[in-house]
Image (cartoon, rainbow, N blue to C red; front, side, top):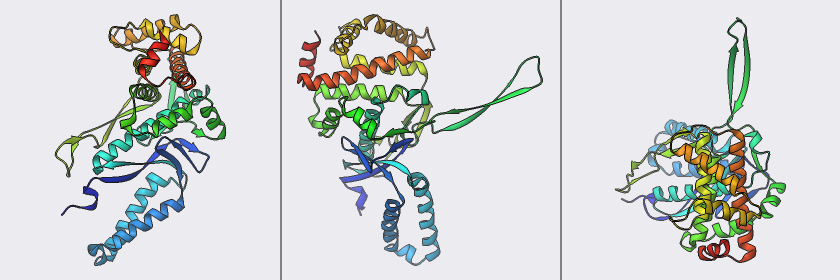
Length: 345
């Protein structure tokens, strides 16, 4: 007998988001809605779960087992979704089989999160405001360090916070900043069906994703497993995390810029610097050339570090290029890749 969740249909998913504050009741990016998951919403869903359990003959005959499973579910979901009545979550839906729908919706949520990362203030990075889907970033933790000089028996303790120190807050000020820098154009684009995306839409979204991923403290790769409903292997298994290094962050940003501003494999990397210069209205070709050489040294193994100034430089350059392109694309009426290429000649 085919179960209700075995067939292809619309599924709605709620994902907990770590270290993100929404001061409005909710905030939408494309098809994804961020909202504060409160006690009322939690109890409403738990009521529906209890009603489903009440219909189960097995639990009706075993009242203690019924009581235990409800308590376990409440504890588990309250811990992961409710967070003492104040947890930001993302809600979105997808039409497919359950396993594929999870992957599709998760992808949409990641894009929405990365769009928010595009609109950081300059001092956000000082506070290391990592945020994203729960389990894919490092939450705030405290690390104790003991230091001792070689000629002394005294230890000097110090404590530092790593991971998320301060939350990323989407408030009226941030929303105004976003709307003045092309957010409405992005929001409209992401509300379209994926089949309606043209090549320029995909380039912009890809660049935003590379940039957003460069700000992650961790990258999560899901192990593949065999679905009990389907024969193919899909990636909704347990996530494995690895820490993202500083050199990788720089390489991600260069990848974002190349994907946005190179139009064939024959074009040389110098064209990227020239095109960014035209987009933002000032000459950054020497600056980009320096960063690109660092990228090559990293990729080819002759360099394994990036200093803070270099990282800040590539973050600022990538962010400016993407935002200004989105703004100018709207004003100039550039709708596709050929029009963008012709304008950047």
